[in-house]
Length: 279
Ligand code: SAM
Figure 1 (cartoon, rainbow, N blue to C red):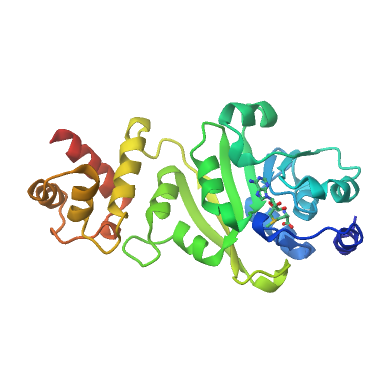
Figure 2 (cartoon, rainbow, N blue to C red):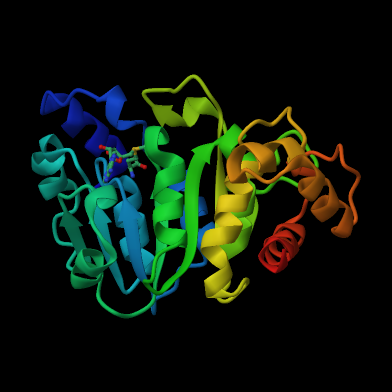
């Protein structure tokens, strides 16, 4: 079905966009195809989409992929989707909240094999959704997601910059992110108050040892807990590390006692975790 007809169908069905669910839909076919191209999805791929909406991205994905499994929480979209996705036999719409499904439940729906996530994400849960997939035990190969431009900048920020945040490192722990395109707010219905960007995160296995993951995460959380504080002060606050010991650890790492967490790379955090173990 043509996208402009889907827009009319939504209107005719009395559908009301739900802001709280992050419902900003895309109807522009060129943009939808560009997102699919950015994702690198091919005929061999299973795709998981989060947020079917009116099915506009779903159907463009279905044209390129082996199979599309699309999750949606809003059952009010069901009547429109039964028409907009009619006849597409490689699409399955699952009316479940992805954030409430554990890996085993997801595996039962998606299968054991590899898959790629492609989504125009609901903005209110962008980071939890990205983390949900990037950290999972499932065979997620990549995530190509439309997010707020500022969030995209944080995902791919360089060490020491204003955008560099705990989430930058969380993404780096499991993969590498690149911005594939920026998208103006006028491309969405209804139009949000912010511009957006498409980010592709390619998952990289064993970037850091599995046993290091929990303590490196804890350390990153602590280091960014109070951004204006020094790393030594943040360590003291979160780990009850005496100030002299914190200063010594940071010195051993090769930094000055007044360094802030944002100056450390992922590799520095891994080294710091190991140093803290030794002491
Ligand atoms: N893919 C469509 C498009 O590009 O036009 C819709 C994108 S819209 C930004 C996000 C969609 O995600 C909405 O339809 C919303 O109802 C749905 N959604 C919100 N939270 C969700 C969740 N936790 N699990 C699954 N879908 C969710």
